[in-house]
Length: 160
Image (cartoon, rainbow, N blue to C red; front, side, top):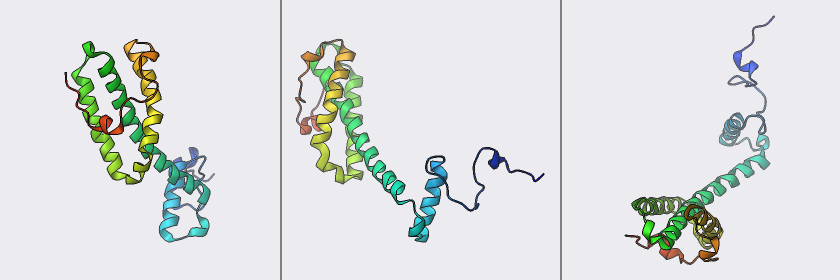
């Protein structure tokens, strides 16, 4: 009986083993293989459809980071404006920190600038619902459309 490599038991091909990694079964091995094929210029062997999907996914992740920062900024601004008696320094600090994160994502991905209005509209709906949940106030007390211009979201000073 031939000795088996431990990697055989868990379905991982040993380094340098021939064959194609499966996108569906082992995305790590697949990504390493695709990177190698690109570097070698071996275009005929590249899994074009899945590589394209992964590249698009990278862009979506950057947009998601931008939206996430905007959503939490809006959440804290809504709570700040609708519960002045409960204002917390942590909300102010969170807004400041997330503005920096937003600026970094946008600085690294200037192509997202054309989607800022879309991002603001998309995340406001969720921020409004979350603000209602966190404050205990009726959702209808918060404006249906975002009451803040993007410039205010990114620069308005919130101080007690």
